[in-house]
Image 1 (cartoon, rainbow, N blue to C red):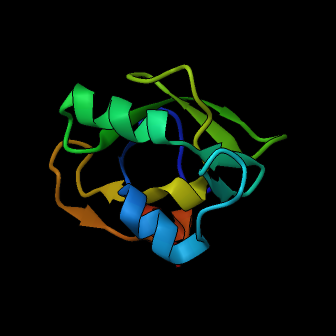
Image 2 (image 1 turned 180 degrees about the vertical axis):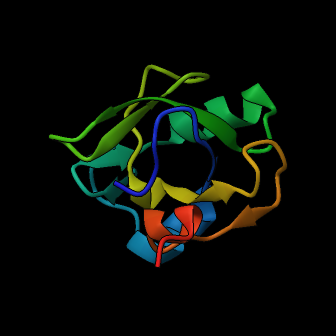
Length: 106
């Protein structure tokens, strides 16, 4: 798991996920590990008008998924997340490879 509770993350757009993983035959959704990114998730993000930025509310390490404060009805995976917001406030994202980069541990 790349992120922690209270992190603000930017969610990838449908087209970006489709390009990376393709659309599955399961109801036209995109498989991202054990969970699917579905059209309803995309619609909810658009309705929320949040610049695709969500706050991680809880983590399920057993299933490698997150619950988001703003949209708690779905499970989200690392594959669905584009990046951590730069300072947990701005919408400027910086992709990370590991938690060590954020903590600057060497």
